[in-house]
Length: 207
Length: 207
Image 1: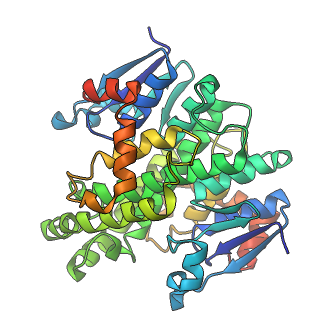
Image 2 (image 1 turned 90 degrees about the vertical axis):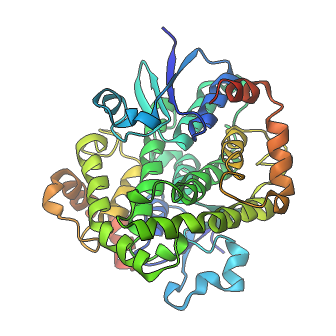
Image 3 (image 1 turned 180 degrees about the vertical axis):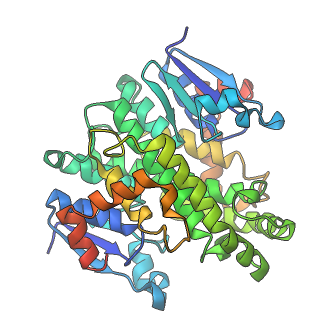
């Protein structure tokens, strides 16, 4: 049995944790959860993660959920992989700030496309939310482009798990009808991330 | 000049970072941002935080935003305050997971009450979102009550910044029309947090 089990869904935010585990050389197994058949709401999966979401990382210690937490944990667990500025609390904080923005603002903006039922009940609200996703995702990524992505990596010269998390969401841009010509730095970052063996491996696996 | 400046809004999520700084004995100044007069969108404030949100922590190193990042940073910066399990990556991960849930799910549910314009444009959508807030906040807090809050503190015996963050949001329950009788553990936690000198001090100051 592998040291870690990661529950994943193709194309979802679990991509970041999956690629980080792969990059760190962790002993892990990725188990797909079938969202199309609502497996995340099955009794079996809810016993793993009562939130009914991915990613969920299972180890001998228990279960860990939420991408920013899993990503920082992987960085701390595998210090030799240099996936976070572990000895610089301020820069580590900047990494966490970036990850929190992706988790709580960018991912939430994206989720209004097809998961409006989380916050409303009427079809007209869902239609309104969906129509606004290109605008909100464009605004989010313009802030990333102009203020947050230091280059060449998220934190500047320091590569980190935030880079895996950013590419996870920049892979959604076309789907969310964002004009990627507005985002040259983000698109350059995405192209460079796609050259990394770990990202290639997870992308090919459908992660 | 104080070592840290924290931009805050009364009753907002900045309460957690404010109380954590106070508890840690940090040399800080809290500066209120006047949301009622939209000061967060002023040129002056956007120069501090281009996101136009609070909290924002300013130090000699620069600016740090997003509650989970600020809270973990305070814990790392003031290790003698014992505000996080800094030497236990798994438990630190659990703390981060809790904070990410508050930031990306609970706070987002709450924000649909008055900030629906972030994700939609029609008044009918705002009304629909607002009507669903008691339901979504109840669901969130029932999960916290039954699965996440270990007791006596969020992480069990280990007190942490997650406790400041939880009380910040459990203070919103009545406003969000949640039946608090469903949440005995959360309400007990809130009462005990209100006994802490740092929480008292920040609550009295209006934070």
